[in-house]
Amino acid sequence: MEKLKTLWRGDMALTDAFWTWAVLGGLVVNVVTSTLFLALISLDQSWPALVVGYGLSLPYNLVALVGVWRAAARHDGPQVQADLARGAAAIWMLVLSVT
Image 1 (spheres, one colour):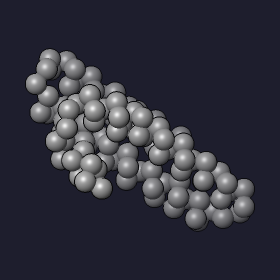
Image 2: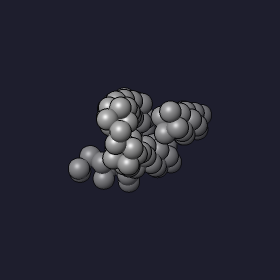
Image 3: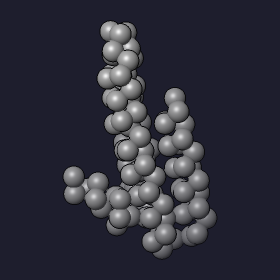
């Protein structure tokens, strides 16, 4: 939980926030919740499916996006890296959230 707080505050390296938490973590969280969503839908459990499918993945996606955004603001490297990370994270989280 402490790592998620660190991510939320943007108190980590941009590369860690982006690659570990947004890309890899986002993929894992969204694959797991999508799988559970489909399993619950197949059991005719539509409300629990919605809660699992979106109630778990959307908050994570938001935390990851905010974390990347804030880490980019503190990035000491080239500004283009920070801008690209922000844009890519926003697109990635949008894709993960709507699929």
